[in-house]
Length: 194
Image (cartoon, rainbow, N blue to C red; front, side, top):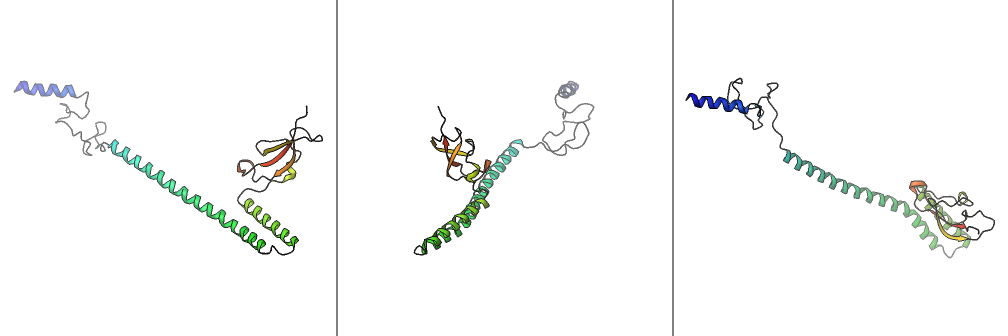
């Protein structure tokens, strides 16, 4: 019997350095529970330890939460796009209404037709400006050096009075500025001499 008790005490001493929850003769008892229950005392403070987390379960929940957030974001983006399309379309409806009104008066005086079409064009430009894409003024581009960020070269022409590489004609207006550019200005550029 004495040899069995000596063997148990020896085994307890051997386990003590490796396992903080193993029984030692000084702790006065058998092994402490290591199943993560809150009743297992913390070896440094004597307070109960929190349960060991189930890392795999936490990982699965985090992956599921991330997937749900991604799907929710995709739905929200589609809703925002639909709202933006509806807003732009609703702002263009008065322009279409005025074009139809001009077509119904096609038999009228040509001067009133021209004035009506100009008013519709001004209304369309106001809609674009309201959306953040104002029309660029032609005068600010004439004589300016070609800038690929602002200009689209449609043709190169011989213009003896113009500096080579400068804009000599605006062929199609541009809308927007800088990063909010909807379309660059289509221009004709003076040819390099030589």
